[in-house]
Each structure stands twice: as structure tokens, then as C-alpha cells.
Length: 118
Image (cartoon, rainbow, N blue to C red; front, side, top):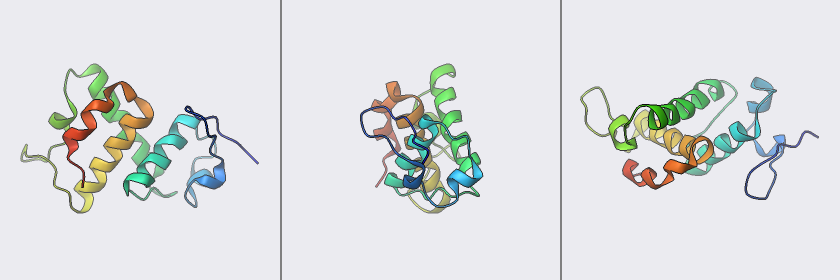
């Protein structure tokens, strides 16, 4: 059985990931697995079909925070420049952003509250 190294103690295995994720991303890193599990814990279903795009959302969020000189509240907005609502796809995007921060750039964890997740 493949074991993924994880920060913070427990080591998730591929069996901990949602069905299809390991098949879709056989070389998933421990950091990416942590993202998938964090997203799942926040209520965003990550599947084999969505895993690549979902990870991209998380890594792009961290890139913007690290290199863009912005805060999470500034990038969690819709086309109308208003904060994303806690419904439908917008809520899922916010959940993925929060999971991205947790897994890929935890130095910005204090900004997750700006998402105002339910």
C-alpha cells in the first residue's frame, strides 16, 4: 500500500482519499493529498474528474497570496467584485481556497476567516 507522508503526525494513505482521486493522479504528493482531505473536511467533494482543477484552484490561491500582494478577501470575489456567496459553486470555490491555504501556504491561515465560510 502506498503511504503518503504528511505534516503534523498522521500519515494518510491512498485509501484515505476519495474514490478515483489516486487513479486520476497516481503521483499525488503528500501536500496535494492533504489539500484533498482538507477540502473534503470543509465540504468540497474532490473527485477523480475534478482533482486536477481543484488542486490548481488551491495552488493559484496561494500563488496570489504569496506573490500578488493581495489578501484572501480580495481574490474571493465574483465578476461583480462582491464577495463570493456561501451557495453553490461559489461556496465550493471558497472551500477549495481555504483548503489550498491549509495545505499549500499555511502562513496565510489567519486569512481563512475572511472567506466567511458557514
